[in-house]
Length: 233
Image (cartoon, rainbow, N blue to C red; front, side, top):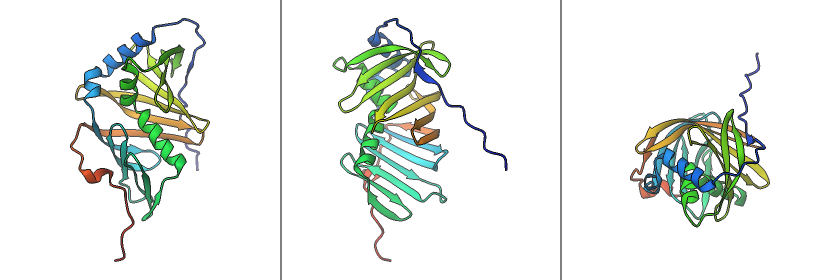
């Protein structure tokens, strides 16, 4: 059997240039390109239908700033749900429920903090420390790297110069580089939303393709209810 073709690794790196540009101006243009600060601030919940090349179809519910629920649709996947209610995280897999480890909870918190909407909102605030890190090669396009100091995480945004799109976000977790690369931007309401996200880490390379995004849906309270094991039949 022929080996599966290798997927090209995106190149997102500093290009070594020494020019110093205005970080605030670059962020402001990226925010405008995304849809504007008012439109970003107006997003409180997001419901996404997507497919992961690792886990198949899934439904992702977000409530900013700190709640997420991922429910897996495929009958072929043993993984059924991951829910973080802002305090505790639980994972349901093959009918069994376990509390997420401390490292897994930190990973969920980091993923929420590094969401493209959350990062742009944070970076646009006057009291957030942002720093120009240098010019960048963003998968073949000229861009700029901006470091953003969040309360519990430092992230680096890569913004394409020609379009002002936020093309990638990078952060370090447990000593490991995690890189999210965004593409296939489409209008959703007042915002431009990436419909393909590739997340790359030391032992991870996962691409998620979005089929539908709904901004500010009325999510039922049980959306973020922690899963429990079924009682005896």
